[in-house]
Image (cartoon, rainbow, N blue to C red; front, side, top):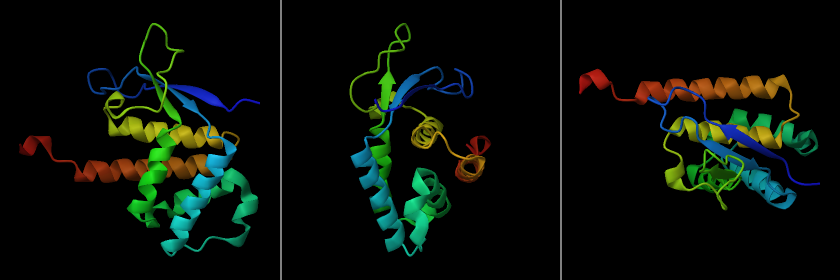
Length: 164
């Protein structure tokens, strides 16, 4: 059976305010081996950061692992988190031709193909969702809360345009 795939179109905002508006991306599920290594490295990073990982987490599947990780992700050292974040984007390909949206550019998304931080966050969410598509509402509400928290922190640290 083939790995799961999903097309994502950036539809938040408007073309005047979102430079990625209308762009299409193809997401492809990680193969089992890399996914297992990714999850293991994430948990080892959490453990090294002092997070107590429950013994039964292994039996909770991807859904339990993701829910636990989202609740504890702020504890992980960025040096360990950065390669994990990069690997998430290995699942993302850009579809450059609006007339042929089904054709993705080979290879992972390139830096200049995404111009908005919010698009990167949306794609990360979609990559996680692709891997845990049969998950419960608990995960979805937890992630929605985390996204809103990140958005509010971003708004608080953004420079005031009227002050310039």
